[in-house]
Amino acid sequence: MKIYGDTKSGNCLKVKWMCDKLALAYRWVDIDIMKGQSRTNEFLKLNGAGQVPVVEFDDGRTLAQSNAIIRYLARDTDLIPTVAWDAAKMDEWMFWEQYSHEPYIAVCRFQMAYLGKSVGDLDADKVKRGYAALARMEHQLALTRFLVGERFSLADVALLAYTRVAPEGGFHLEGYNALRRWIAESEEALGL
Image (cartoon, rainbow, N blue to C red):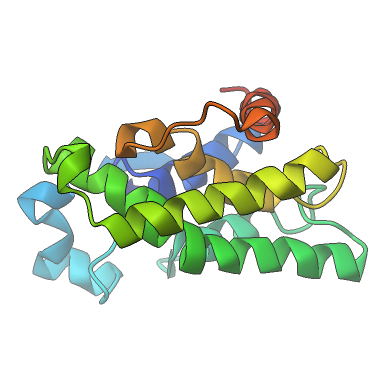
């Protein structure tokens, strides 16, 4: 299998981490989004949305969207809860990550790390919503070891990717004790 991605992208790293954790063989194909490599005709044949990551399987099928990819790769593993309610709660966190976390935490990081903006140049609403996302996670992680209870799941993989680098987007994690504990334990669970 081939993974087309940018190693600076949390969404791409989720897929790499999953393959590494599950000992799945893959070849990494670097795509430099800043050079427009995800907008070439060749790449658009893999993913018409022009986004990374994309996985191309040995049979030629392709799959995009990081959370869909990691959910597919982790099927039949203990990273997906067997109790239906817990699996649904995992999905809830994964959908929330793409709608209420990534658009703020990851976008601010992109603007600072890729575009060279300063904290003062960031959209104040994005910063406010990023901190709201971190506060929601802190609240949950003060109650449970991982996002869906006491066991590490794909929800943790999905949210670890950008939360662990939130300071690169101007977000301070001091005072988020449960969140910082969770980052360390999630990194350990992935062998990072």
